[in-house]
Every structure is written in structure tokens, then in C-alpha cells.
Image 1 (tube, protein in one colour):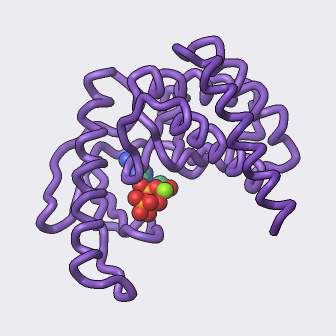
Image 2 (image 1 turned 180 degrees about the horizontal axis):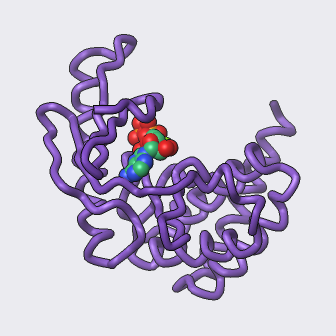
Length: 202
Ligand SMILES: Nc1ncnc2c1ncn2[C@@H]1O[C@H](COP(=O)(O)OP(=O)(O)OP(=O)(O)O)[C@@H](O)[C@H]1O
Ligand SMILES: [Mg+2]
């Protein structure tokens, strides 16, 4: 097995066209809390991948999971992280991001960590979404708005030269494809003004 990535919470191995994602122990957490958290995220990610497969959504297909050994086996996406190629066709990619996030939100799926490191291009150049360990189901405009706000912050920190164009393009696509997107947009303004006030008072 080849170790291909080690994130904050998990080690990822590649083997025979599949990825094994293992959530390892965090020594600084209380052992019981740590176990519950890893169990919860492993289950949640597996559950979400199953749901996404039913939607035919571009994401890795789940092969197997175990909440005893805190592992998920899933299809390997053969391609690059969007983070490394966003600038090559940033408007096209941003449009696709907005449309796909709307598709998730229309099914009340909140990704929870919308960054360009959690998006990969597959062999047909489609954006696949990965890393659903922080995802959850909610129909609240607030949760959807926060999801978009995190996307904005991720774009700003990793792609600061093009981030405004990217985010505006993604939002336009989101508005076009999202059910109730006006409500989410109103909420997004509130989320952002909260952020601004917080910064002013810091
Ligand atoms: N299905 C996959 N196919 C190919 N590469 C993958 C796949 N899943 C993950 N990777 C690679 O591994 C990296 C880390 O994966 P992931 O984002 O799921 O873990 P993480 O950030 O540690 O997650 P978590 O926040 O759940 O601890 C990704 O950025 C990507 O490079
Ligand atoms: Mg990740």
C-alpha cells in the first residue's frame, strides 16, 4: 500500500485502484471522545458517499467501511487536485463548483469543508468532490450559507488573485441552479456581516 496523503485526521493509501482512508488516533483528545469522533466521521463519510452514488454525483464510490477500524475504502479518482489547476480555467471551474454545490444543497447535503483541496478533476475533467467527513444533512438556509462562506474563505486564502471572480461566478451558478437560493443569499449576507462585525470588535 502506498501512503498518498496524510491529513489532519487521516492517512490515505492507494491500492489496486482504491483509496483506503484511515482515521488515526489523536493523542491530545480524550480517548473516548476521540473514538466517538472518528467513528462518527467515518460513518458519516460512508453514509454520504452512498447517498451521492444514488444521486450519480461526481464523488468517489464507496467500496467498504468499518467503524471498528475507522476505515473507508473508496474508488480512487485519477487526477489532480483542483487547487493546482483552478487558475487554468478559473471561470469554467468556478461555474461548475457553484452548480455542484447547488446540487448538494438541493438535497440538503452540507459539505462542511468546501476547499479546492477537497475537489479533484477526474479523467474526463469533471470536478469530483471528496472528504465528506464533516458533512451533514440540513435544510436550513443558515447551514447552506455557512457552507458557501467557507468556500469563499478557502478561495480567498488559496487563490487570492482570482478569488473574487471565482466566487462571484460560483455564486451566479449557485443562484441559477439552487432551490430557494434567494433565502440562502440573504443568509449569506448576514453571515458575512457577522464576520465583519467580529473583525471590527476583535
Ligand atoms: N478518492 C480519492 N481518490 C484520489 N485521491 C484521494 C481520494 N480521497 C482523498 N484523496 C487524496 O488524499 C487527500 C486527503 O484526503 P481527504 O481530504 O479525504 O482527507 P483529510 O483532509 O485528511 O480529511 P479529514 O478532514 O476527513 O481528516 C486529498 O487531498 C487527495 O489528494
Ligand atoms: Mg481534505
